[in-house]
View 1: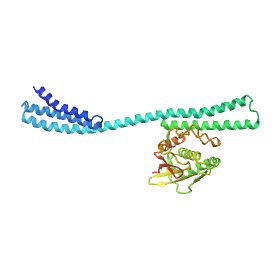
View 2: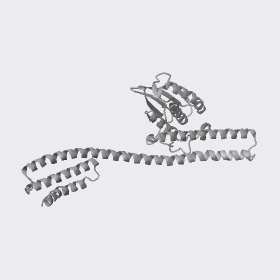
View 3: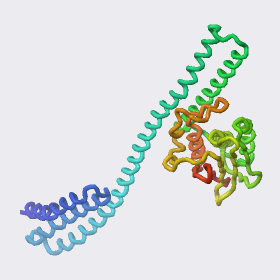
View 4: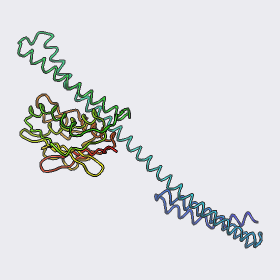
Length: 336
């Protein structure tokens, strides 16, 4: 009889609870767990009251149970809330991990396609020129010298692409080890500008850098030099002749910043979130318009490397359209 009464009381609560859970399908995990805990406690309470009404327990024992069961229910509800929040957080984290893995896999496939394209064309040219030289088809000294120059130029470009791939693999594999120290951002920019000046002159682009206002940041000189060099190379490549690339810097609260402004004409708003993605070079990437001085348009890895190196410094990098160009801003922590 006690079993029958307890079962009846549990079913009186469990059936409505089941209907409530069905109505809550698709809602949060925390809410589901709280409903399950509440149904369980109320089922126990209904069974206790049913047994008490049948006079199977004393009045004193009923009072004790009416104290113990609600207290246990309150504790269970608190545990349920905590567990639901924990499960919801883990589920969101797992979903983010899955999305990140899918995005990384898509980036890897895209990278293989881009690199295959970028290597196929120069390799075919190198083979054709090497065969022409080997078979004696080209004998004119001037043409032979031109072939040698182009072979060297294409080799340098492929070597640069391989270096970018190696750097990117270190970043993605977490194998990048930084030697952090107080670094004068002005010195890093000065060296990078001096190295990029001949390229800018060859492209007919004016390269200007602010003389003052440079902060001292916490970073690693080789990696920060790579960041600035990649930003300058990207800006020079996309700035038309007689355009200007401006480099400036400053301090904002507890961060130092570096900005590179070019005259590229702006980036479509839909493409701005993808600028730092691996192998992204816009719609004209496979047939880049800029082929000046042997520049093949880049492998689409420079800005991805910039983001990886900046994030390794616990900094941030962003891009926005300003005027007739784009402004890339790098924010880095200041020394303690």
